[in-house]
Image 1 (tube, rainbow, N blue to C red):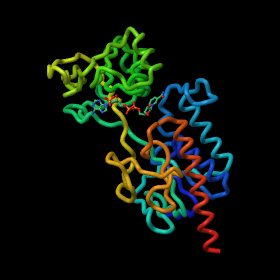
Image 2 (cartoon, protein in one colour; image 1 turned 90 degrees about the vertical axis):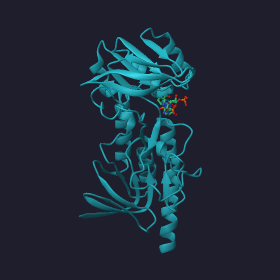
Image 3 (cartoon, rainbow, N blue to C red; image 1 turned 90 degrees about the horizontal axis):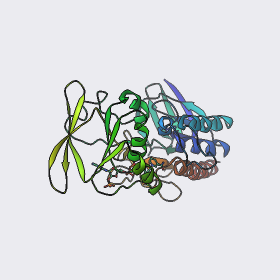
Image 4 (cartoon, rainbow, N blue to C red; image 1 turned 30 degrees about the vertical axis):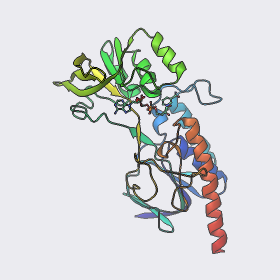
Length: 312
Ligand code: NAP
């Protein structure tokens, strides 16, 4: 098994990870970025971003390609498709073991992002790939002229519902309240979209069908009325959970597992920083992930520099 030594190892190759890598490598720290899958993170699946400053409109994949090229300019070493087996953040150096290699790092920056929350109802897992999907951009085209339902009232639910109207004949947005959480500008666009119908004050109780999804059992939380909503597909967009497998419990986390940091992105462990969606943050955007990455990397490289001065 190969062993690698780096000043800074970054876990996760999304916007937070690449921004951290750029700042770390440019700050003269030897830097590696490790990802469990392909590099690019969540934005790689976004059709288009229109709120990354300076980029008026850009494909998510294209933006992440630019992030990667920028990190390449400063010699960041990239290790995609690394299945992480264990992470010891307390030891010095900190040790990350994957199936293929062992990485030793003076400082670790956690940028592993977040994943979609499940509804946790009967039929949801059973129908994944047969009507249940967590990625409209990946699966929307399968629903040409069909009826789909999106669950949730945040930016993701409403934006993805609008995206789905490109294919579907009708898109329900099922929301547990009678007011959306999404930004006003996004709400206004959705209200104008004739293919979207809102199902207010309602939750999904069951995803049902035979081979494929045929309907949802929904409950009106105000009247307790139960009804069937005919649909060919359901896209839950009800928020995110942090990707913290293998690192859970080593540092301070909130009730959902998001990592708690100070304003330098330092976690409760010396030399360990958390940036982007994986940390307890009020806003999960590419711009905030990139900003976190810059802050975390600057303080990680200061930490590494101080360690080197002690050793000398
Ligand atoms: P979010 O903002 O946390 O919204 C989650 C939605 O799901 C809320 O409307 C919530 O209802 C509902 N919900 C939560 N748990 C539920 C459950 N068990 N059953 C039914 N409904 C449930 O999550 P998000 O939309 O994924 O967005 C995450 C972050 O990314 C946010 O910061 C968002 O602004 C950002 N984002 C931004 C953009 C953009 O700016 N273009 C696009 C996508 C995402 P309540 O409202 O009642 O709590």
